[in-house]
Length: 346
Image (tube, rainbow, N blue to C red; front, side, top):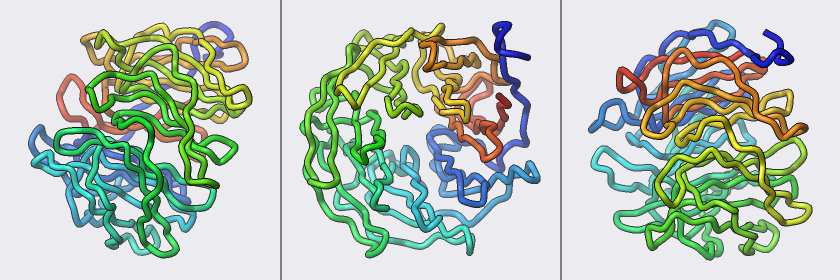
């Protein structure tokens, strides 16, 4: 249906994953397939299982399991085409430092050096150098300001300078300059923060950036084609889902308000489409999990409605496929842990 009459896009059910899961990862491989790893498959059981979605056949296939069961971990596509998985929490909700690498050419996992600090609810960002910057996260009782860098050429981790603010449940976005913008999260005093900072890989130093207008965590941050960064939703200091959005402009170093979403939400996803627009899906809206979706048009600073997903879901993943469609997987919904997946056609 044309967007010009107010509604655009279509969701279609896709085959379910082999295992229901949430707090998992989904990574687009160079082959165009999608690797899903780990997550919680029940309230008390973390899985090491992995599976691959093949858009050409529309099917899920199991692949070898990770050596370590983990959730709230990260998965980063390296320049080699392999995938680096870092940290997370195990079935006992204890943070882990172990890392492993998936090789799509063999379908196998290989161990690599552990991080210096066991952490979960952290971020991992591929730098222009091909190295991976890990920031913050949570330990047994407090968040971390510490950061470290993985060098795929040596398979080793190296420390780098700490952030000014310890934080977890934050975002980290690679800017066109090669620097990394970190936003929000929860700090060492368990306060939700609006603070932001920028990492410069050329110096290895962090520099403060202006704070967002709204303190938030469980939000999203998406690099737009303009080089600006769109932040959407999250939980605010009143522990309420917020519809508010704001945009960071690296050329001025300032935040500007953006039009709010129609629906306040947290634990949602935000995916840059080939059109340059941003698709937001699901999450928690107030006290209810939602299937609603909306699309942001940066050229007009406007949100437009689109069709709902086939199922309500939060803590899911959304991955842009080479076709321009978006694959949504798993999460938590009306039936509990979800194995279902669906595809959005813009």
